[in-house]
Every structure is written in structure tokens, then in C-alpha cells.
Amino acid sequence: MKCREFRRRMRHGTSLTDTYRADMEEHLRTCDHCAARFASTWRLQELIDEARNVDMPELDENAYWRKIESFLPPVPTMGGLTPGAAGEGLKVSPLASLTAMRNLLLPDPVLGLSAAILLLLIIVATRPFISEARFTSVFENLPEGENARLELLYSPDFLLKSRQLPTDLPATTFFWIERK
Amino acid sequence: MEGSINEHINRCLTGDQAAFREVVNRYRSRMIRLAYRYVHDWEEAADISQDAFLRAYSALAGFDQSKKFDAWLMRIVVNLSLDRLRHTATVRTRQADIHRMLPGRKENPELAAVGGEQLCRLHELMDELNERQRTVFVLRELEGLDYHAIARLLGCSPATVRVHLFTAKRRLRMGLATVSPIEEGIG
Image 1 (cartoon, rainbow over the protein chains, first blue to last red):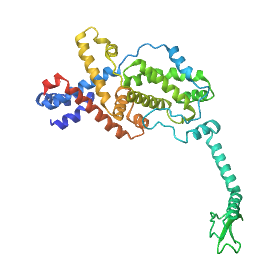
Image 2: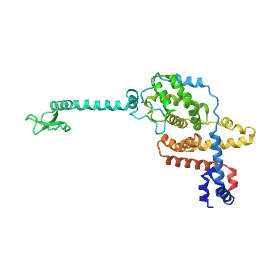
Image 3: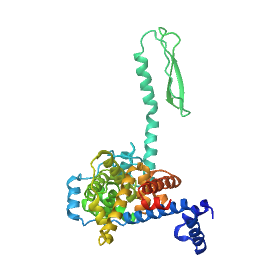
Image 4: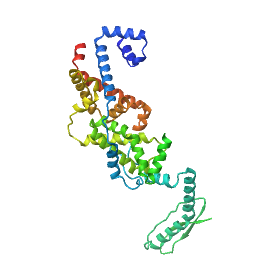
């Protein structure tokens, strides 16, 4: 048996058949390197077994709980706190509070989706007024003689209109949008 | 099981501390034991686990209930333990713990001394592993989690977990071999 084969079989541990075991024992007798490796692996496994079976000392459950209780806030906070002090994969994301809100207020995904659609409709419905207000604000505050152009996002739901500025502002075109 | 833990969590979210106490009772031993794997001190391990429960409670509203609560809690304990190790430079005497670990060897002081030394050396070598290797080793070999569970917990692939475990065990094995008179005799 070659050393590589021996190591491959060694990884199978107790699932070895008697034939394999006999071959391996034969190899152990002839190869010092594999024998040393086998011994160190065996010893490590024994130590792992001992470390795994550690006996936990008796604990005063009430005292344990009282210490936790003394620091407990009245109700869990809405995200934001980093539960782990270090390492990866634990920091609460910036969306944690949103998730928390969703869990508390919208436990049903369908309800959440409906709320999102409603919010979107409100935004779309109010958009022309917002855009026009912005347009008016910029238009009225534009310094004299400045050549400027305000571009508003075009959407197929809205008409794109334009109007010329007064003659003292040369060749300047402003756009705004209105509902169809 | 997970369904009932989610019920407890929902009760906790309404401020029901009795529900949280039940959660603590359910996971207390496991979390203390896990912390102990890192700090090798029961008192400190209990302290870390209490801190972990507090942090978990505070962040409970942000916990995604479709995920496993115990894995989330374990991750908190692991991170707090690693954090404690980083910031604590105190040298601990582990003989008392080792003595407790090896009840069967009490009758033979010589054997107990050898075994205790080896276990102590194992702990020292574990301290020398990097955080990933150490965490994978602890979760797999001492806590008995499967590769997929560890991978989910650490946010990596099971193949990566295997690599970390292989490296950790090789380093431990080589570290133990450097002090072992038995091995020297074999070579």
C-alpha cells in the first residue's frame, strides 16, 4: 500500500473493512512517516473527544436569569442595535428597522405588497404637482441673463410641454410636465 | 420546535419577559458551553452568554423569523467570545477546569497530569488558530454541527468550511506533535 492510499483510507476511520484494516496495519509497520501521522491524528481525536465531553458546573438558574432581567429593556428595540460585537455576518443591516416594522405592522406579505403599491400610486399621482412646483421655483429664482435649462423626467403618462422665457433671457427653454 | 420558538419571540416582542425567560432556559446551557470553548472559563462563559441573550433580546425585532433562532444566537455568542478574547489579555490557569474535564483520570495523578497537559496544549493551539479556523473547529468538532449549518452560520460555502477544518486540524496535529515524545520515538 502506498502512503497516499493509506491516508485516504485513514480518513474513513471506523468504516474500514477488515481487509483494509489489515492492509493499513501492515503499512503502519513498514512506514514510519505514516505511523507518526496516524499516531498524531489518533491523539488529536482523543483530545477532541475529551474536550467535547466537558462537564458544565452546576448553575444557579435564578441568579443567571436575574442578571439578564436587570438589564432587559421593557420591550425589544426596533433593530438598530448590533447584536454581535465582532466578526462577520452578524451586524444588523440598515434595513433592520424596516424589517422590524414589517414584522410588527405587516406580518402578511400580501398586505405589505398592497401597501407598497398604494404608496407608489400616491407618489405617481402627486408627481406632476411636485415637478411643476419645482419648475416654478427655479423659474422665479433664476438670475437675470442666465442661460439655463431645466429638464424634467419624461414619462409616457405625462405630456411634455415647453414655454419660452421672457425676452430678457435669451434662447432659454424651460420644460414642465402635466397630466395627459 | 422552530414554530414554538417563533411564538415565544412574538410574545417577547410585546414585552413578555416570561417568554424570554423560557427562551433563555432553553438555550442557556448550549450557549454557555459554546462560549466556554473559546474562553475556557465557566464564569466568563456564563457572562458572555448573558450578554448574548441581552443583545439578542434588544435586536429581536430585527430577527428574521424564517431563519433559525439558535444559529443566530450561536453567532452572537461566537462573536462576543472572539471579541472578549481580543480585548482580554489576562492569562488564565486552566488546571481546575482540566481537572473537572477528566473525572476518570483522577485516580491516576500521573495519567491525569499527562492528559491535562495535552488538553491544555490543545487549548493553547486552538488559541493560535485564526478566528475562522477556530470557529469552524469548535462548531464542527466540539459542538457537532454539520458543514451546511456552519456554512450558513458563517456565511460561506460548505467547501470553505471543510478547508478551514482541514487546516485547523492539521495545525493542531502538527502543534501537538512538536511536544510529543511518543511521536519523536516513532519517527
